Length: 95
Length: 469
Image: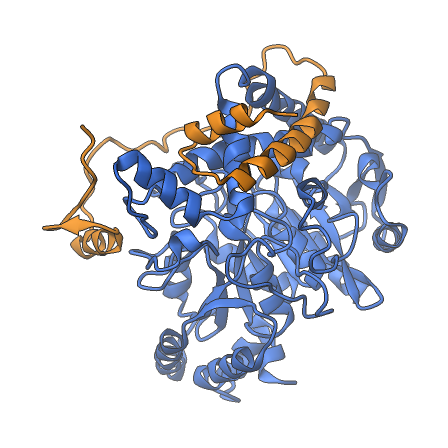
């Protein structure tokens, strides 16, 4: 079973606050699911695998230009943010 | 026939022949939704719907109008409609109002559709029963004690319960096909890249697609044709133009994957699907047994890749940019509390799984291994489509299960989608259509095609629909 410390470490990486009850349940659930994932160990090795990263199709990349957007969309985005000031989204002090 | 029971095509004919107006149609659905106890909608957009219906009636009066003009629909609540709340069935987006239209919504609006509201789903589309919604439990219209499937359960139940003429859902792994099967409607999961994902709240970006839920195969085709195509706002959308095909079952090579009829499939489900296959054979189709040897690994690979992508995608809900923001002593505290309080149990579980799979020390064993397995799965399908035109399979090993039956056991819930994982990971299109019933419970037939061969699976499904009526 995955340890309490390990769950806490992953939760910290995920920036997720878990209660003690949630942490305990997560230990149990993650262990069961990770055990199920173990069946992948039986999968044959594949040489030179390119994986599944979705391919961006030829010619579909646009130039890295700023595209004009409707200013009302910008206003709507800012209106939806929890904390804002003077048309900007406000973030807590980082330093 | 009641107004709410019409297909898109029938409703269009009625509007054309002035048997009723779009406002009549819209009011009939709104009344039905109001009286309903299925819990299909999170938000009903009554005013928007009536406004759109009135505009449609003006256009209809000119005599020049398209197939979808004035047709009322429902939209899964993870697809953005400008100025309408979009919750993704999560508390973290309880008061979030969409700032713009998703491309699929823009396309539907251009056709003059009427939007009745936003349908229930599993939170952030993570689930197979719609029980993971933070708001309500949607009931299956065919049996109120059972789930409608998920994650597009509200959309499928709204179509089956005649609360809309058609609906949009989204699928990452089975989320259109499964509820279609459980509710006895048609659901199409397009090829990855066939439909723009712009404005669909991201879950597993390498897999997510928007797809229609409809009463008939013909209706699914009508919607898919409108939704599909290249979009400058989604670099993974393809230059693809849908063209309708007519395909006869005579001489059609239908692949039957032995792995999809293995142990675990309920005998009655297998019987219904095999009967459908037999009917195709009687019409001259060639039935070919095929093997997709990596099928056993598909579900595990899916859960690793999708949760990894989700853990990254959902990091944007940080209490700064959208929705719920819990006060904290510093920025980190805001992140921890907003996510901790805003996300439900399944979403947290998946963020944790994805973070674990991507974390240093486990990346090779999980994420990288899953990517390798996806390569194997894709190869299986490449080989299969050398021999066959389409693949027939069940959608799910069982019909709709009871509400509450699988909520306590995440793995039992995950296994519900075991027959969709392979084709999802390979980016293939699949359609689920009603094949028969176990008592009151619908059982779906799944038809999987090669990439961008929606024309083929839709044409075959239309032929099958005639045989299965």
